[in-house]
Length: 209
Image (cartoon, rainbow, N blue to C red):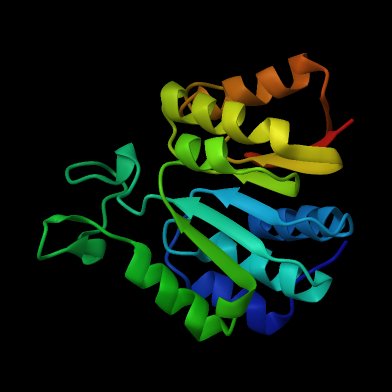
């Protein structure tokens, strides 16, 4: 299994974000396999760039690019009063979240800026104007049914044959977490277009048939 260098892993662990190391290593391995197709790697849900570091490093090695899509205003559970709110990423001038500056600093510190295209916008709108195929899609955006379904419907059809679709925060047991990512994971399997190739905690890796 492909693994990041100690330097990249340290940058990942130092970055603000929520992905555990074990899932990060599984994401890195899946992206490395998918990068062999030669197409871009895309993630939905950037936050402050923790997982982007891993995808950018894979893209650098493979001679492709990582694309990351986020409106950078935070998802539902990151708003004031919610469990994952971080007041350090609130723009004091406009009073709303803005994770973009932190994300850019994260990439710069890791030396990976040139290997990433950051798209600032809402996932369904970006998907609607995205014309090409992708070797890899990582869905880790909003966790409501509306947002998860929009991400799946917008991006899963753009995964090339043999490419990889990864879905984060898949919790079959409702007591463990929200069910929206689990429901789109089931949709992917039931579509017949994808087969599961690995499970690491809440991370599901599927390959397009």
